[in-house]
Every structure is written in structure tokens, then in C-alpha cells.
Amino acid sequence: MRVPNRIVGLELDTWYAHFRSSEQQDEIASTFSGLLHASPAKFAKDACRAAGLDWKTPARYAKHLIQETVMQPRILVKDPIALMSAGWLYEEYGFQVVCMTRNPLGFVGSLKAAGWDFDFENLQRQENLMHGVLQPFQDDVAAMCSKQEGATFLQRATLLWNILHHVILEYREQYPNWLFVKHEDIAADPMDGFAKIYQYLNLEFGKSVQNYVLESTSARNPEEGKSTRYQARDAKEVLKAWQKRLTDEEVEFIKTDTAAVASQFYEEF
Image (cartoon, rainbow, N blue to C red; front, top):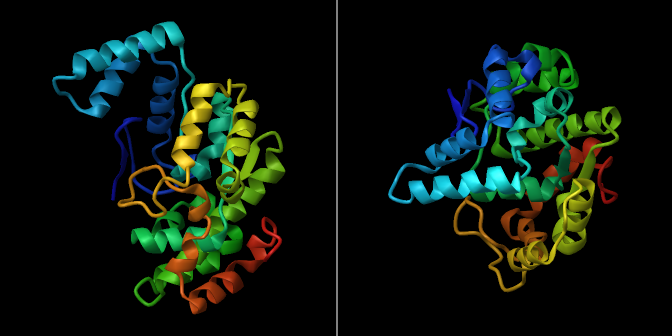
């Protein structure tokens, strides 16, 4: 299995790759060093290649070259699949990390709506990871791998949520200077939520950004997306989407199965 990222230009052999467990350490380090230290010309070239070559390529190249040369924007790495390597990225490259948590009901509801599942072999074969931060889940992951066909989607989804948020709890202890935010808080008050993120990142929360936040989260936007690709949504309705996606029995199972970890993030658990 390959997990390509066409923008970064990196193909990994596992989801949630843990740098210190990976046999691709040299490739990962070289790719990020090349990305973060690229010249304006190289960055513009790579951005055009990622977008696909067509008749717009010359204009696209010129745009990126001007942006990188004159404006010198900061690079945003938005990658939830990089969670297990976030500590390494921070320590190696000095990333300012914003880590978002999500209520397990919303998380599982979104996986169900999108039809996304997970193969725990991705974690089990990363020995340093399983003997390290994921040691408390060794038996659960091994059992899930041995009965992959017999386990239900709900069991896999809640175990994945527990694992990801257990890692986030470890990060909260290890890196108190990171910014930890809740998806629900930002959806409930997008303007305040993004203002805090911009302040943490020392970015200007200007009028154009504020207008974009308003337009992207407005009640004029649809409640549900038409695909798994990004589109503007009604932020407040997104908070309640799981209520239509999950049955009462599923809600009860999720609450019970995630209570130990979820109670450390959410009072209702």
C-alpha cells in the first residue's frame, strides 16, 4: 500500500506514519527539508507540477514565484495523517503546532457519512510506535488485526478515535506551548476561534480573512457536503450532523466505548 501526497511529493508505506518507527526516515526528512527550504523558483515549479500541467501553468508559475519572492508567505502543513509525527516535525523544524480534537460522535458520524474505514495493520507494523505511546492499545490493535473481518465498523472507528486522542493527550503533557483547540468550539464561534489561532501564529486577522471565515461558515451554506472534498458549510449545523447520521444504539456504543478518553476533553462524557 502507498499513501502519496502529491503536493509534498512524498509516498509513505503506511497511514499515520511515526517518523521514529519508519523505514523511510531518510526520505521523509529529505522531503520536508526540501519543502521548507526550497527556493522561490523550486517552490513555484513544484506547486505547478502538483496542480497539473496545462495552459494555465505559465500564469500559475508566475503567481507562485511572485508570492514567494515578494510576499514570502509562511507554509501551512495541514495534515491530520501526520499526527504521530507531529512531535518530530516540531522538534526538527520548529513548527508552530495547532492540534484539533473532535467529539467522538462527530468523528464517527463523519467517517460513517464518508464511508471511510481503517486498517489497523497500519499501526501494528510500526513497532516503536506500538511499544511507545500506543503501548496501552497493543492488545486492542492486535485483536483488531486478527479479526479485521469480524469487527464492526463502529468498533474500528471508536478504537481509532481513542488512539488518536490518547496521542493528543500525550502531546498536551509534552508540549504545553502548542495550541490545542476543539472543532466544536470553532464551529460554534468561527470568528473567535480563528482569531485565537491567528493570534497564536502571529498572523494578521485582517478584514479579508474575517470575510472569508464568515462566508465559509455562514448559515447560507449547505448543512451537508456533496462529496468528501472541501466546501463551505453551515458551521453551526455541522455540530448537529451526527444526530442524523447515527442511530440511538450507535450513539450509546460510541459514548460507552470512548468515555475513558473523551472525559478528558469533554464534560458530557
